[in-house]
Length: 179
Image 1 (cartoon, rainbow, N blue to C red):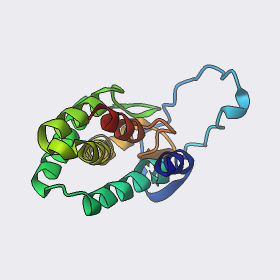
Image 2 (cartoon, rainbow, N blue to C red):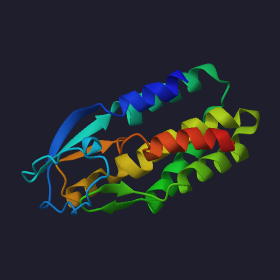
Image 3 (cartoon, helix red, strand yellow):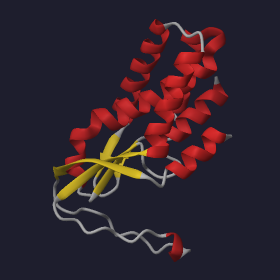
């Protein structure tokens, strides 16, 4: 429960890493939100994108994955294979969407992580599902797509930070439930 609350609260925190030159502003017009106090005000776009890392969507899941690796009797080979397989699937299914971010079908990553964990993890499939799911999404859909950030035309791009229900968050929780 502490992990869940930490990820949700941490999803509000983006820590800037670096800036890169980007294409023109291509943010789509969005329909008005039913509750305007929940809508973020748009940030000005000056032709540069700040690349940040999200506390709840990247740092906390990576820290928890490292904790699981240190405390669970998981052989290294299945972990590496599961993370590599998950990263490849996430890279293949993720797409940059101008004005929005990197998107991927919601259930592809959790189902892939659960299947890989059950095939490779045996009785330790639940921790392997979380590790492969979270690290695989971060590597395949976020880190391997950093060069695509230039095409997005947004003022801020966050690694692991598409809001509370980011792919990393959903994948970690759902993959463990499926495994």
